[in-house]
Image 1 (cartoon, rainbow, N blue to C red):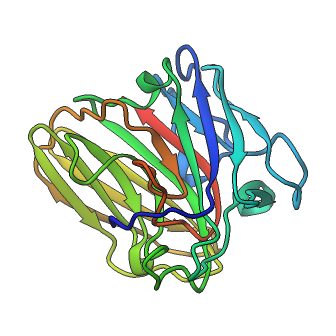
Image 2 (image 1 turned 90 degrees about the vertical axis):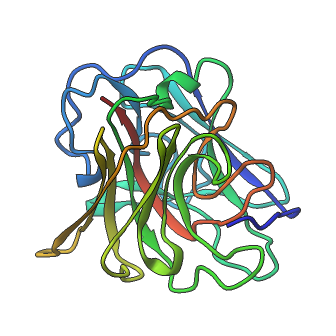
Length: 262
């Protein structure tokens, strides 16, 4: 999506200083982040900080990379702490509005943060847990649900997971080309899912797993090289697209956000 937005903005800034993960990911993490021995990357589970129903503030990474999420807002919008999957916590973004009054994004920012979310030519995985509102698109200002991304469609490099029309998809673009893989079906609203996109030397794999008892795990693949991903000054965002003006707002809750390099 390329809709420009000049309305209220809420921003969550992720400042990363230093290295990435060491050791294994906690066993209580969602399926979206259930990987061990992660060599580097970023991950946030939103389990610390304010109680549910309160305004989200600052969060430290559960890894050892000394990363922090800081909420900043304009126009009176807020990101709040919500219930996460399986009794955990997440963050809730504004609901859809045709006026464009609600905008939110989580950004990786400042010098020193880029290496933690810069896969280059390496294999990597990224994803999150999410719960989508029944109404999440339909206006020029809010017509998509970008979950996690870095880079833009027309830029030199990009990796992104979105849920346009409730169908998860993953796009990765590098110096060898761009590939997109889509889930086979739309997700249900008001239910928690975990989504993971894995890029290798030969293609992309998208996995979607519902949290409900007995929910199936769907996996779709596409082959083709994407090469070195160069995202430059672009920021990693969660909950929307932020090249300059935010758009494609994700409407509802997100938890267990991560990028795993290697």
